Image (cartoon, rainbow, N blue to C red):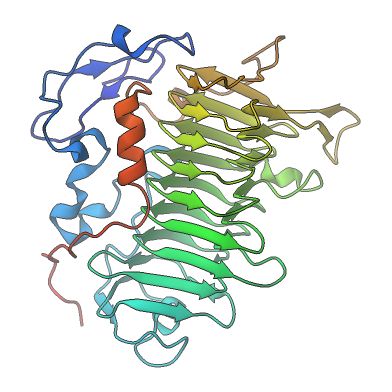
Length: 378
């Protein structure tokens, strides 16, 4: 499936017709006409151009289908179906009551509307929070994934979180095997997604970020050298006019591919102390601020050297006067390659078509809840 560098993958990843193989180019601004054309009609469903398009065929097909570092996340695959029946903040039938239970659960919603959270909603291990089939918005506070593993969060909206250190989704400490898929996040007082304090093996896919300042922080601060273990994949996301941190990275290894980032206020992606960012086939479209990549040197707590991290750009598209801002010396030195950790992922050229798809098929989606073919467990 992959070449020696591991970055080949089916362009259309439907299992019944894998389609052509695509290897992205090394030059960041090679025209899209140079890519091999698809053997399938461009007029066919646009969803074919998105990864894991088959996961809505049955409810639990979502489990284990993440690409990248979060690919092992199974959520509540082996637990019973659990139905949220009220929009109340707590109590019987609430999302909070379901998330605090210790056993695996596949959580779905019987109601649509807004859940006003008075405090962080803590999610325990082996949970899938599946918003398909309804439109559920969390506001007031956000989700907290603390010392947990195997959590999938799909098809929810997060908006209007208020208070000091209030993030849409806060992942810390020591959490792993997390997948955040098709969520819309906007307007929180702190971050939209923060991944810190030795949390790792996380994938964020097909999410829509808007109306926000500090979008995504990966790695807490220079004193937390344990964050060297962090590994995150971010793909097919739409960063829509958010100001900064798409993401900002300290210590961690981050693979970005097929994202569309436009009209940022300060920068698109920032590498701070010991960060390793592999940016592949993304679309960067500047507004007033033209430079996409920023380096902020810092000193790790256990060294005497002040330095920024590294950003490797492969196949990225910089449009409307965007300047990449890459370091002119030692670009890519000390930067990991994703194939060191996983062999395949779905990547395609950063074309105008991809940009249109990411504007329409990221964030919360109006999709029916798939049938659950697994029998109920008592």
